Length: 226
Image (cartoon, rainbow, N blue to C red):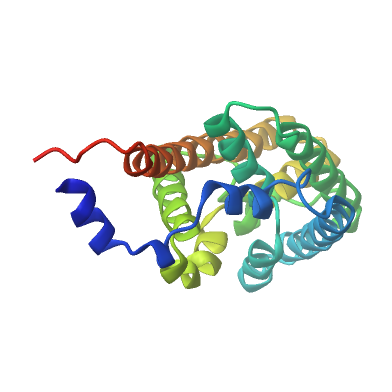
């Protein structure tokens, strides 16, 4: 009875299989050459845009970089790999991507004068002191992203999820702070990124795990409980 109710609430045509998610999210699946070239190109461009937005204290530019940034894709790949209990290479991709974005921030920091007060920039000051609400927001964002990925009928919310996820901007801020030799501020920005990273992986893993168990329950052939 429960499985029948679920099927009526969420038709099969609106659900996405784990195989589909694997094809979309893993750079090591499908046309790897095309996926990787697109990923690294877009990530570099988004890092440059984010750095420009941070250095000019432009919120609109930073938001644009959030929408372009593909960094959430390999992070979601980590969650998919954990659900499937196999190595996907997504962890290495995320590490290399982080180094690239930080390096862009370091290079772009030369545009700032030597006596520039980093904390006078709202884009920097807001990302160097993460708090509990940042973690809660990241968890909620991760759950929203998991729902949007698992269902075809709510995919339109993904741009909003991309904006809410703070991934590339804190890495750029960390690079800018490192470029200006402000280690403590860089650590604060990195702490924001790492907390968001773990919150997103945890939320996505939980959402995908539940979806997979539900599919397994429907395909097991056991009679539904009444």
